[in-house]
Amino acid sequence: MDGFIALYIFMLAAFTGYEVISKVPVILHTPLMSGSNFVHGIVLVGAMVVLGQAEDGMEQLVGFIAVVLAAGNAVGGYVVTERMLDMFKSSKGEK
Amino acid sequence: MNLFVEIFYFAAAVLFIIGLKQMSSPVTARRGIVWAGVGMVLATLITFAHPHVNSNYLLIFLGIAIGGGLAWKTGKEVAMTDMPQMIALYNGMGGGAAAAIAAVELIKREPMDPLVQLLAIFGALIGSVAFSGSLIAFGKLQGIKQLRGAIRFKNQQRINAAIFVVVAWMGLGIATSGTDYGMFTLFLFFALALAFGVMMTLPIGGADMPVVISLYNAFTGLAVGFEGFVLENPAMMIAGIVVGSAGTLLTQLMAKAMNRPISNVLFSNFGEGGGEAQ
Image 1: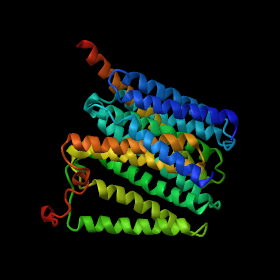
Image 2: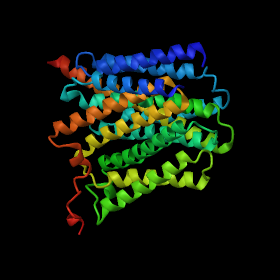
Image 3: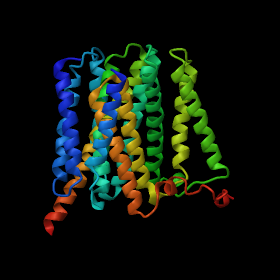
Image 4: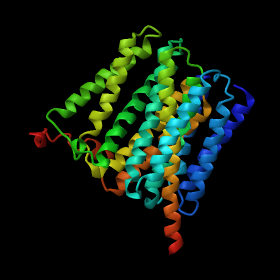
């Protein structure tokens, strides 16, 4: 990929991340941390690609570790965030 | 890359950003995680059609089943009060995955563009630190005896700084040597990066852990973004960098809510002359 295109993507994504959460209230800090933790679970896609083209045993082993860890990140991040936000909803509903 | 894969990755990136946006407001937060979840499922499924994925299907399924299954079980069963350490644990796994991706790319020794190789090393370093640091944070919050409290000893900052200098120097060496680095050097680089994550987290007390976990969350995001550049995977680039910058802002906000600057949290023992350790 052209180096400058990559640089533009980097710059725009960085500003997007900053803007998107700039007005978050304090009560949502922890759930949002958990939610963004889930989003970087996208690393699973990279882990799958790496393992999908691994050839010798060493590459397969490290690639397999990557997939296991990444799947844990994605699934765990989702489950925990959902539980947290569920609690949030019910406590708001009682009011 | 084939067209369908591109379209799905694009959709996933959009869904992640919408999801994060919604998660930052109390009214829509619950919906936000579902949007992001849909994006993740789309991206994962289409990756099976990725042109580079052409073997080891069984291993991929097995890996997802093991990692996902264990995380599902622990995430559902853990008590509400223990959530922060679970975030640390899952975040650490993401960092470890990013580092492992870099490791495979470096083990393969295919010639890379020098800039890309530097990014791979960067991602490997940050990912490893996020991995081992998050595991220590998990241990501290879980109340493991040996890790409890702020563990400090004489000359700690100097030792940490020395480890960092060595690991950065080694990383730079690997990044600039083309394919001409030894297997042992590579191994040592990862080992030292992991050690640095441990050493950096040990002196921080349990009350500051949420801020530290948020910082490592931003680290993992960046590492994922960098490995995205290495693999030329736009979904990883965008999601990773967005989380990297959102996580950095969030870390600042959390530290501010505690009424202290981040540097104070991370290096609070700096300049005390190791008095506490004696």
